[in-house]
Length: 236
Ligand code: GLP
Image (cartoon, rainbow, N blue to C red; front, side, top):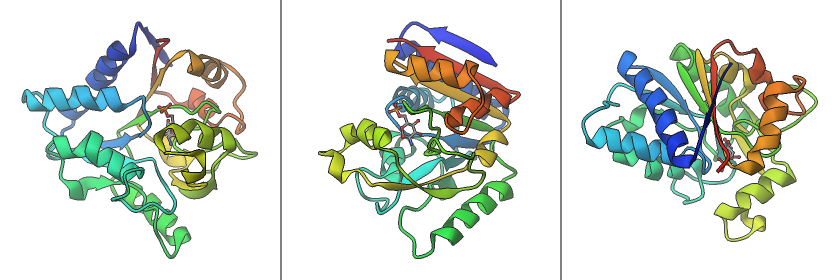
């Protein structure tokens, strides 16, 4: 594992964006696994700037997102599809048809989950997976549990996740209680993983996840077994 400690959020965002742009330059038709949350916003902003300068071309990139809230349509401002469009995809030359976010609306979530995994496989897996980390150690929406969930699945969100994410909603009651998330297999099969964490409140869980025992009670702890993982952390 490569651990990079940086001085502030700006540096974290620039370093992560460098990492992602290097991937896109080396393999223009790469598959990027992308994440939501407040942490990657600066990374996306930096990538947009470099795209606008003409330094990166996303026209052949495929993106696959980790998760989505159940019950929210893609045009709902709180949905992760909306987040990705407004914070990233609308500002770069990626083809929207090549951007995948699990659907939060479905008549048959078992089928939706199965198809998401098949779709990831059909692209040959993920080249670079960007991850944030939740305060309870979740990645994507893989919440602490008795087992590592392998495949894309529907999950009931834990109270700490709902509380943490309620800052994006007008009240905690509005936060959906369920989500659909990529499972640990697709994440662990990504050729490279880039985990970014920002702020003192992430320090304890980051330490436990990266240096403590590997346990499904801290889903991110499984990342210790990945052979090509870089972690960028800023205390600020
Ligand atoms: C959400 C997302 C995760 C993200 C986490 C941390 O729960 N599903 O993918 O890593 O939030 O978010 P933040 O970066 O805002 O702390």
